[in-house]
Image (cartoon, rainbow, N blue to C red; front, side, top):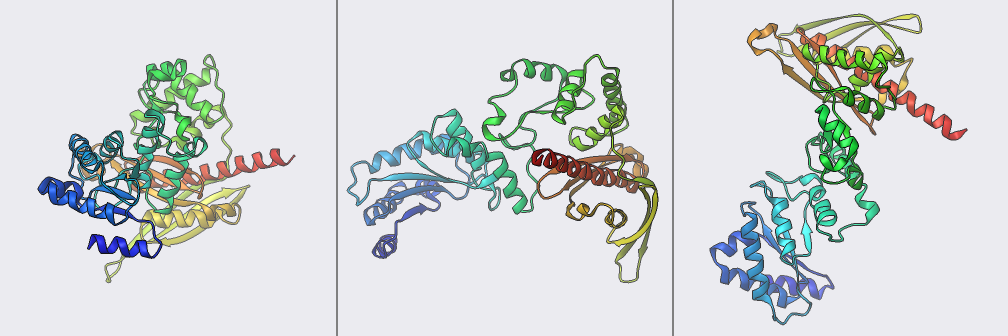
Length: 414
């Protein structure tokens, strides 16, 4: 069957890559027969023989041994084309990337994988991890020097297309891949990045990220401010004020490591530069459980914009959905760009589980305008109030980003 299939494709002018499905498990079970399948494919005209770890259960040391044995066994085989080898790994044992690298080191020069490792079950070899390891650390020429600088952008674009939240902790391209939190870490990495970074984040299009939390020192706050274009002086009393506010709020349950937009707004508030797009006057939420067992929510919000009071109501499939819809409805006539904002993720964390239903709740809301993502936080013993805080700041920060982009555009044109 292998011979007939490959010869047919060759007769049609096709070039053939032969993916040997279940190769490693097959080789372990019956090495002689498994080798015959590869020899048959090569003699029939396959240009590439690809070793597949279809079940994802093989470990790197086994990959090394088997690939060595097979390449040695196929040496001297008479074939229509010079033999070339590939590797196709799955991540069921968490070793897909390591397995692919082990095969390359033994002479394999085609690596099959996917962006972000997306694939069935536990996924495939992650090209966003493989490419920088092979190119920047092992010296293989995978893609162009300029292309590799777009790796982070590509990773996040594919996440957006797949409608999946990017993995913040992904190697190389994750939001946290080059994050620094402890005050000593931040101070050290600013003096010499090699103290806490294995390569420059710019090499793969990522960037250093200074995280602020209750472990933060003044170095964190100053460095974080610079990433938002705010140049704070260490001796400025406002710097200490921001640091103290940060620690006080985190003691109340706020978390700014994952809510950088809220921290940016906090800094602007302390500096007196936070723009007021709208003022909140209050909200009401009513939920009704009907006989058809569907919960209907109605939210009413009152805001002031440019001295004008706006009262709007909207329905949703839940209280947060209704609140978001009512806010957008109230703001849309003044800020039509809000139509582009999307709520991408909504996370709830109970902070003191022993308090039962009266426990303090932290809500993280991730928003997007299609090009950028930002996260805001709210904390309250009332989950609706916490959600309201996060949703409101999410809309406010989106308007701030829009205003900044427009300012840049004006400067560029002039």
